[in-house]
Length: 298
Figure 1: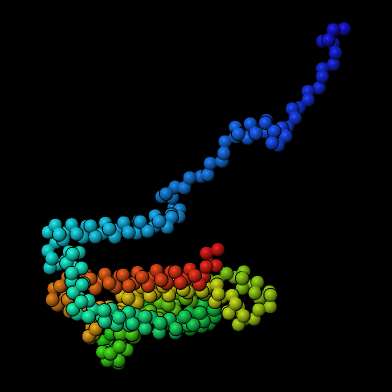
Figure 2: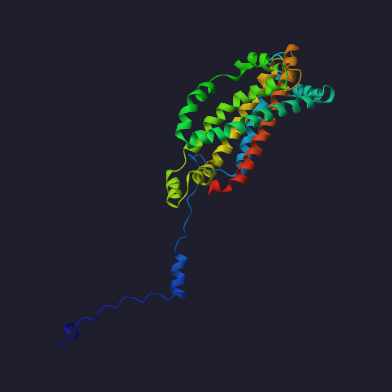
């Protein structure tokens, strides 16, 4: 019979190209490389580079000073109500060169950190106790929550009667404004500890003291440090209120004297000095927290 009557030969699958052969290299060259997903600049929670963060932050300050300069130097706002940036800098230089303003700055910084440290030393242990033991929380929280809503400035007349017009009165204003805030925020931070870590510590044989010292306090330490950083910013507002009444030194005292003379340049300069010192202390607090609790970001 003809070839058509013979059996069909089986189909042999093609052999895979050996690694490193010309065929495999050609197929690899034809494959498109994986393209990484592009980041969306305005996507929610999308991080930005450190350089972009610095440029954006400085950009706002530049825009603010530009608008301020146009409003004052352009004659849109009378200088009695708002001094220009140039006038403000001249008045600031005069304060340091002729009126010893550096002493006022030093007194204000001492009052802020003195009252804040006094509040932190007493408030942090109480907050840890309230967050750890529910009975302690039930005993203290109603009173602490009540006092937290009382403005520190409302105590100034009483504090003047009790402590006079000296430094203790100003320290107590900052203490009252900071203490109750720190207590509640620390208690919430400690009380929000992960239950699985606590149960694991009990399983490993830890006692109550070990739970507090080895689980709750280390776990809450980054949050406590962040709480102190935030409350330190609030302390700056309390010290100015304390220095506005019955004070003979400090940035607040200088602002009061400048207001009586209608010197808005000195008033604005004093406000900016407070902001600069607060910003520097805030950055220093952040850097210290990152160094001490680097593991918290892992």
